[in-house]
Figure 1 (cartoon, helix red, strand yellow):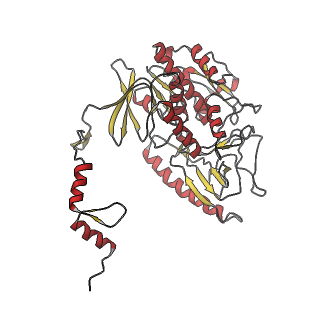
Figure 2 (spheres, rainbow, N blue to C red):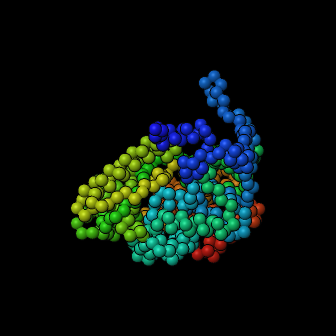
Figure 3 (cartoon, rainbow, N blue to C red):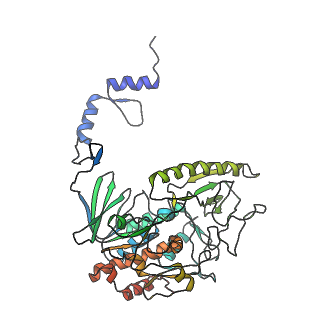
Length: 473
């Protein structure tokens, strides 16, 4: 009687006999077919990379030439809210645009970070004050089933669906003519002999490559490119959390009103009687919180404060990532113990940590908290923020996007030039859309008028922003 082989023994026996298996089956591929497949589809190559070498306990990276992946007019590094707004705005001006994103999707913390609330959108009188690219995105979400909720319900802020936003951004990118590279991490700046930025270096599965550009917009969130190029900046630390979505839930225990991150405000909301006092938008503990509603029925998003951490320290980030995932699961287990929540489950945890701030540019202008509190007006205004927590609505000057010395580069998003207390507002999604839109238009003007970013005609820039529906105060 023949011995009955286990699945592993069968595979080992077949590999010894034939070497390969047909995809999706345990049928071995014949040696002849395997050889043909190797000849037709496989290619034996040897890379020409120069690996780092170990020299007396020192690791040395040899100098080597990098292949140029692309030459472009405007290079946008980072595909979050600021980066996508910058890329689309520049492209609509008729210039060549390349957008590079480290993850496999666009939207940054708005999608991969599950930061689903569009705030601060309103002023102290509950009037919407951020339009332009922000309004364009919300209108695209309006027509999608389960795309967005709570539109035009100030002071309650709109909440969108992350997958709907990813779809919109993918569709816009494919139809725009923008050259996009995903899964591609900006790791260095390219600077010429006069100290001007001429592009950036990227790392991907294709290896290390360069993209040359006339103007670079750093929308990396962490100021990675301007820091690599030698721009001055302030390093700061802030809370780092991890947002999650919870499914099969009816309870809402957070307040989706204006200024959502734990500071006092007039408007509160409780979605179910007996759920207790709302936690005002984010949690600092794992005590069975239910979170806020999303466009998806019976699915909430739970914003987390997290401890203060160093977003530029890989050890700190790793520890936070692991601990937050444990805490998120434990939070759901506590939530399941509440009567009526027995079938609640963890739908997903964000693939990106909720980094708030890390680097702040030393810009031609630094926006101060005293200025926004006093209602300061700026001749070079290019954006606006709604009221947030204890801060009123305020203008954002163009100088916040321009490095104090570095040429050929602009910044947009959470890493622009502002004091910490101001940056804690300018980091938020609709404000990032606003600064990104302005940076993209400014970069296009640089190319069309053959000027440096610091010499852009602010009057022209403001005219373009008004034409595109932006509100500047």
